[in-house]
Amino acid sequence: MMSNIPMDLGKVNKENLDREILRVGIIAELDAINLYEQMAAMTDKEDIRKILLEIAKEEKTHVGEFQTLLLAADEEQVKELENGKNEVEKELGD
Image (cartoon, rainbow, N blue to C red; front, side):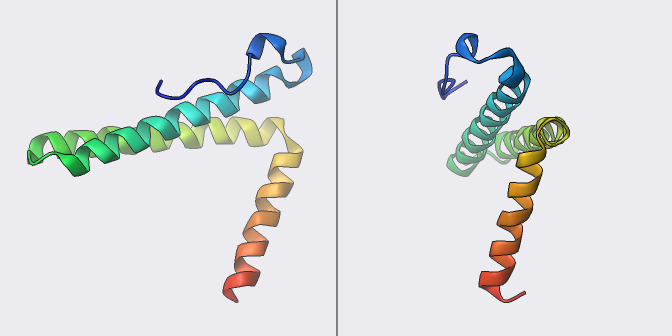
């Protein structure tokens, strides 16, 4: 993983541990997506680009898996995602 875990998971209280593990998983997958897409943009080899983009796509699925678990575990996260969506819609006039 390119980024560091933003906290010492050993110091997280047991009540929050699973949610923080899921967030760290999301961070790791987003890092991987960025890495693979950047490398795909750099290469001149179409076969390498194709595989890198396919792997990045798989990592996006992993983000969705972690997010699904996180939303099941954190009602506040569900509410704040909805608030964020509403703010964007309001700003864009949708």
